[in-house]
Every structure is written in structure tokens, then in C-alpha cells.
Image (cartoon, rainbow, N blue to C red; front, side):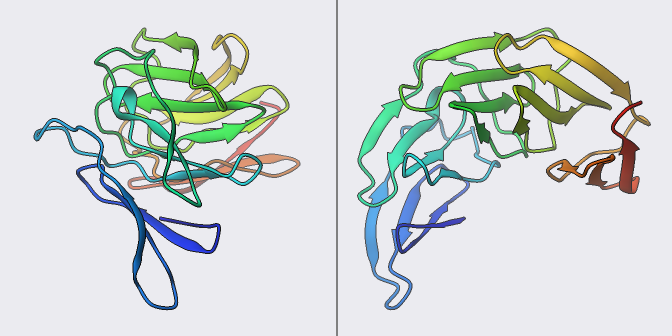
Length: 196
């Protein structure tokens, strides 16, 4: 759920998006993407205040919607039929939206046009749980049992730190001057030194 343009915008498990007026609860607009009945949406909405776009769905069901009107600005065409449900929310920054498919890998689309800039489908980006954080041309996230630092322009892994198996990271990576901090189901709160 996000608050944008004076509206509360929510997405349900089947990918339907509704915008509500907070004072009355009236529906301002709605968007119903074509979704296979067995494909559920687990990831949350992402919002970019600079463009006024809300990003809903994942994979070939991902769409950029005008937050004020619900108008579809673009629909993903680069993922093909990939992009099943995953728990993370797409990361936004530096003109890109970075998303994941639970079994597939990681994808980077142009924020304004939706053009697929790159994808990595090699098993190293499976089972994402942490929303990607984009800073200084790098993506910081956790997938499977590893913390990953990734080049935003190419998708190449710059650094990987193996974590304890089965940790199940469930939060965005918080970056401080010296630490990377995130929460997990089985490991509790985890803090890594940024330099090591």
C-alpha cells in the first residue's frame, strides 16, 4: 500500500489495484490486470514521487500507473512470461526499477518507458526477500542466502557475502555509514560491516 497524490493505493493478491480517497473511502480509480488464476501477487506497490508513477504487479504483469488517475503509462514487455510471485517490493532509483521473480532472477527496467535494460537469470538471484536499495549506481539486496552488491548499469555482481542458510530475509536493507542492517525470519536482526 502507498499514499500518493492524496490517495491511498492498494494492490490485492490477484493484482487488482484500487485508489481510495482517504476522507470518504470512495474509489478514485481502479486497475485490473490480466492475471492467471494460479499466479498470485505477493510483492507490494512501489511509488516514485519524481514521476508520479505507481508500479504494480511483477514480470509480464508489471505496469506503471499514473498515481493521480490510474492511467497505464507502460506495461512490461521485456520479461516475456517470467515473473512469478515474490515477497520483495521493487526498488526504485537513478531512473530504474529493479524487480525480481522468485524462481527467475533479477530484472532492471527503465523507470519512464518500461524498457528492459538487463536481466540476470542464473540462479544467483533466486528467492529474493529484501527490497532492492539503489544508491550510487549500485543495487544492495539479499537473495537466497547471500547479500549482493550489484552494478545498476550492467546487473553484474560486484560483491557477494554468503549468509547462513535458511535465514529468510524479509526487509529492505538499511544502509548506515558503516553497516548494512536487515531483518530475517530465522536470524533476527542482522548487521554486516559495509567494508567487509
